[in-house]
Amino acid sequence: MDTRPIGIFDSGVGGLSVLREIKKLLPQENYIFIADQKNIPYGGKTPAQIRLLTSRIIKYFIGKRVKMVVVACNTATCYAIEFLRKKYPSVTFVGTVPAIKPAARLSHNKSIAILSTPATAKSSYLKNLIRQNAIGVKIANIGCPELENLVEEGQINSPEIKTLLRKYLQKAARSKPDYIVLGCTHYPFLKTTIKRLSPFRAKLIDSGKAIARRVKYLLRTSGTENGHGASTVYFTTGDPVKFSGAASRLLKTKVRAKKLKI
Ligand code: DGL
Image (cartoon, rainbow, N blue to C red; front, side):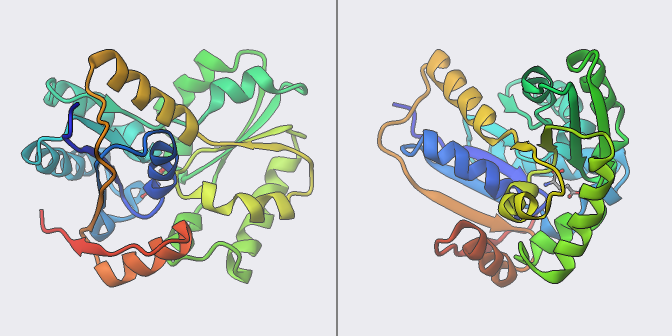
């Protein structure tokens, strides 16, 4: 029995979509969730800034003796995980990358669309993932400005978000994809709206379940699973009232966050 918590972080509420999947698979663990909302969007920061901001969070987690850190943010993974792994070799990291590999394998048309933040869309990390995992597959790589900001407000079905989604899905439609990869952890909260608005039929795929399986596997093989946990502490570096409101709406359960100063 290893009762140490698992640390999970994102720039905002998006990471909750990953936390939700991990908790489904591992309900008897203790979790510390951090939303770095003071600094959202990470996509608007330079790679050096992202590395600095995420380092601060890792230092906090190390102080809390976490047994693992889940980077529940595609943008932070693309720009900082290699750096963090080198800087904190004693920490076990699990990153989040767009689910290009399974989508490419499952696609019948051999055509997939990837929706992500503009920063992830233009990253060389993503381009390498495509090169390695989607040979012979047509890719519509679509950066989607503003979506994560609206999800931050707890909007998942508003006129504003629908207008944006229509525009991005229209772009994706040109290559007739049969899979849409949700390459930002904020987007799984938009699944129902995306399905309703999509002008073509496609399956949606995100990374949450695969991350949860990876976390479980790592805990099992290192003998660090917990059997008596089940607590989650939520922190935000931004406004705890705002975070708690949006998180409660998105998770459909009461969330009370505390302010974190790091
Ligand atoms: N949820 C983050 C992601 O998966 C949003 C990134 C941002 O803050 O720009 O990329």
